[in-house]
Amino acid sequence: MECGFRTLPSSNSSSSTNAHVLLLPFPSQGHVAPFMKLSHKLVDLGVKVTLMITEFIHKRMITELTQPRPGEEVHPIRIVAVPDGLGPEGNRGDVNKLSESFFRILPAYMEDLIKKASQSDGDAKVTCVIADPVMVSALEFADKMRLKKATFFTSSPGVLTMILQLPKLIEAGIIDAKGTATKNEKIQLSPTLPPLSAAEFIWKCPGYKSMEEIVYQCTLTINQNVKTSNWVLCNWFNELDPSVECLIPNILTVGPLLGNGRPTGNFWPEDLTCLSWLDTQSPNSVIYVSFGSTSIFSQQQFQELALGLELSGRPFLWVVRADATDGVSPKYPENFIEKVSNVGKIIEWAPQEKVLAHPSLLCYLTHCGWNSTIEGISMGVPMLCWPYLGDQFYNRSCVCDGWKIGLGLNYDDNGIITRHEIKKKVNELIGSDDIRTNALKLKEQAQNNLVEGGSSWKNLEQFVTQIML
Image 1 (cartoon, rainbow, N blue to C red):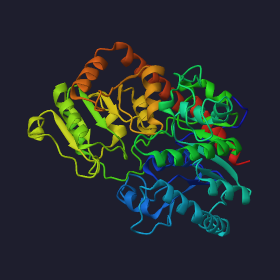
Image 2 (cartoon, rainbow, N blue to C red; image 1 turned 180 degrees about the horizontal axis):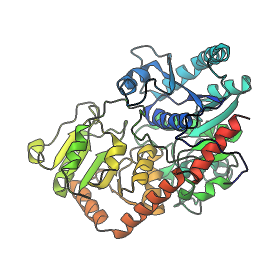
Image 3 (cartoon, rainbow, N blue to C red; image 1 turned 90 degrees about the vertical axis):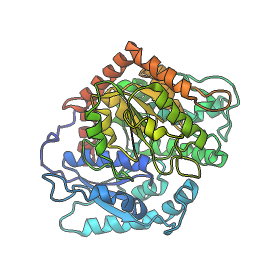
Image 4 (cartoon, rainbow, N blue to C red; image 1 turned 180 degrees about the vertical axis):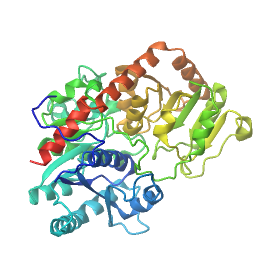
């Protein structure tokens, strides 16, 4: 997109600008991680960056943030930790309580930080706020202080299209005012993406009806906030859905955003031993299995997954959080660990970008969270899709039916994805030359967007230029 703006120094330059941005992610790992990656990109362009996160999250990230890095005397991103209002024993899994508490106290801390930055001799004044589009109080405060404001949308292009089309869906009677589908028909939101079913609405959280109502209200909030922001920054590249730019004029695609070895807000320490293990595996042989930071399985489903990996007969790297199963610690099938000791490695958290870029990777069994999906796209890895909630269901459709870079796993009549289904889909994926070709094509497009002169590269430079005006 050529807009006639002057260019800034390349990312290798140490030149600085007079821009100072304050970034405010929603307090969960899936939101903090892309904000960290965006922060690094802005620092590369000479922008002074302050990232405001909660004290609870800061404690979870401290190990990663304090690791020494060659050639880096001071962490380039200023991180400010503030209370979330819940107290030490508060239930941060209750998204509604967390949101209400944090949004209530946030403006006071923002005001204090902005005033101190403005009065400091060494700091540039805050010139722009970049907030998660659900952060209503942050964006309202930016208006009050007459600061430029941008929203950073951390999900996929299809999901943003869905949110922007909400008023039309209600007006057409396709959904009611509470987000309930009134017609049993698929909706074509974009000419370049697959049609959307009611089961793929992003507020759908199977088994969590109260959560659905909260998420639906959030989508209405996002709809308003992205329309009133000066810019909407998005973590994808244009080729994934060119049509979304027709719906909103202020969109800037700046992805894929990658950490490239820098801190990205991990809540768990990365187990780097998996990289040396991958080095011992044959090229294109390993199934990488990871379901993000929130997916939870029943004990029965967890064991069926384990048996499916064993039945596949292929090497696997499996990320298993301590809280991966409902109510109890994960319990493996009898003698499972012994049986797979020569072909499988199980860890609690992985350096995911490095894993996905490793030549031993065959495919990625994923929950289809957008951070994981865009990383898989960036590395050209075919995907096996097993969504859990929210935007992950439509992301699966885009992966499988839109970009055709993966296959979905299907539940049986008892609501279980069986070991036989896992083996079957692994074999189908391996046998599809088209899926691998499509994945490598998207990888090339992703890389072309990030190099100097690429579309995402130019969009980010354009954004930095505009916040300096």
